[in-house]
Length: 221
Length: 242
Image (cartoon, rainbow over the protein chains, first blue to last red):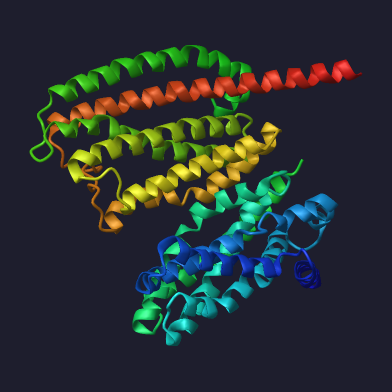
């Protein structure tokens, strides 16, 4: 267990330092939410209707930032080989890296969501529920992205490829995330779509590290 | 003869040498027959003559799903059973599957315009087939991203397996959600299609499957030749240096 917590702490420290990518995701999210009204017009009712969608797409794209760096940095300096030789199961190591990436990139997005929700006309009383759906959904995105990160770890320009590979498979998360956000805004409670969202997220929480470990094992030189 | 005996590329090439022309010829005959029967079949009571797009659109759809399944089985062959030709099979299935999926979308779109009034709709069947097409493109992109074909094959195999969940979603999308797309008319028990339309459809479908077989084997043969050429290039440049 200490191997895994060491991995999480190290990745978090690297991410929180300069150039690590923690703050840049939040800034990207904010910028995205800002440019949408320029594109669709400052029509508040329209923005309120598409608000949850913008929040989710923004969170999805911001989570995919730096996805390729999860394993690429380790591949470059050789520590990936050490991880492959370690006694801890490779699946748990991949999960630990995924957790670190979510804590550094996904969780800040969730924290910023209420503020951005206000900008997009979400009712103040629904802001917590909206943030909760993202809190549940973003780990699913990150752990799903682990597979693409592992596959593109050794590639020179793996960043865009990783995003292209992840986006089609993250569609169920996106659908249920937006639907449960809409339900939260309309009813003030989180119903069946939210439970589906949790289920899909949990599914990716398991599938992601398993597939990523398989990729790391098989796609090595 | 067990499948492992075809693992030898030379033996595969020998089999492909006669199987490709044979299935190609069968494809031409069956497709021609199916389409001929289709054109002589009665028009639909609702759509009129436009229903005849069905005789190519439906086989394309079936082939897109079948090709992805073949790709997923090849992926298992690569990762689990370590069959030497499995990754070659996966690449060929990806290439041909992507083409047929694209044709399915295009023919469906052209068919939708006169019958539904729109070239496109974001309904569950169309959307999930579009996602299937994106998954195909992702696998092909991953193939191209690696220099070494063996590493590329293993990476693409893992991606293909992760994306396989979409195949049942496409198949059952019209049953699970409200869709403007027609539901399945052909089931294992009985079919809701009149035999005058069913028979041309089935013959045409078998013909297109034969066409897929011919193209898939040819793609495998090309990939094996490509790898041999690459190895020769590497050997020659190594000689030139040394």
